[in-house]
Length: 525
Ligand code: F6P
Image (tube, rainbow, N blue to C red; front, side, top):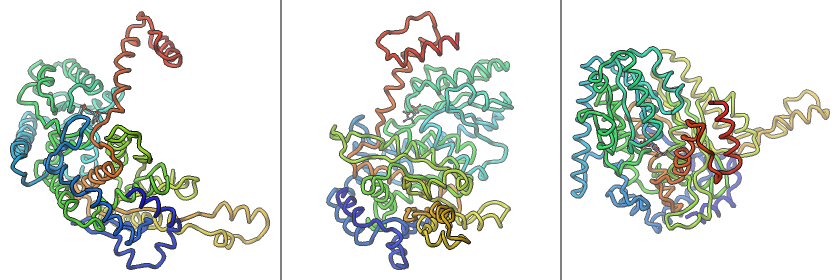
């Protein structure tokens, strides 16, 4: 498969010519699933390549890999775990997963009941204390779907251990009308535990009794015993299966704040949207399989053309959090250089994912996308229909998206640039040269009909399956994250050295770190 992509990249360098006026190709490279329309026509794909890749995918047992995922087989070998996130949104389960599936449904009922209990106690604001997968998914969904909120309910999010984040979230908050959600799969994460302790202290400082405080603390976790030991009441602990990875946990109890803010029906619609993609990825032929094509496009750019980064630009202010959500999903899942077999990968893996919101970023980093020395493939994301009252803005927004995607492809030749000059002197030629756009820069577009809970669920699930398929094709375990451990361990060693300036600095630390610690100590001391 990777060899096919490399060979294809060598032969296909003129994207503009490939797209040209080939309407049949453009149609073949657009896919519709439910209300989602995915346009890969401005990618260096050919229908012949897709046919070859379909054969290669079967030869590499990619269907079997998906079957394993959906059957709850061990797809995370380094932790000996399944990855059960698709089961959370499945309407039925195979017999051997029935117990887990029933528990997941029961958990959803509990989530709805707890949300109502909190509302009955007068809670209007939930503050989610969680980081990584225990923050990014709920935050993305909340900001994207804010207009679907139940009147009078709102969420705030604190991820960072930086006290400024907690302070900002507590600003203007009425302690009697808020509750805190400790969202932590492991319940051992330093940032979340520290924020929770400080939040409890803040409630205490505002005169709340211990009983009132404990009524305001909820835990979402796979480690209920740790939540209990922390002091969370049994009826305020919502659990989820250990086999739900942090960055895939939006659909589990981690989505509780969304149930509170939007109600269980809208949360169910989010899950249904994801289930729609679950069915699609298993049943669509590879040539029309959206997550597969997304995986192929990523690999073609990374392995075939060697582009190190990929940008995601949402032409929708409500999706401002999408790039950071995808950073975790893609880069924590596939940002690895060792395969499941323990060997060094021979090809580059996850690209650097970055992005922002259009049109704003057109006036920031798009200069580099059009004329920079690196080619950065772009994924545009938008909704065809708007949900606000300024109707005339939406065509302007979408025209910008279409224009950027066309401009990236087309570019501008020297002759075209020179034609804009009134003279032909050296300065005019130099100016024209600087206005040349190479073009040939690829992009995809993911267009929703409207940004609804269902559409958002589908969008996220598309990426989840893309990541899984890409990981499989690279020979990576997409469900572990050993790379984040070392920093955590070192932090555990260094923190006491900062809080107690009398502790001798251990000589085994490198000279740079010792110099930094001396400086930090002198400043904090
Ligand atoms: O950054 C590592 C990580 O383990 C993520 O995978 C996870 O989403 C995040 O930390 C938070 O973990 P937890 O939910 O256990 O607090």
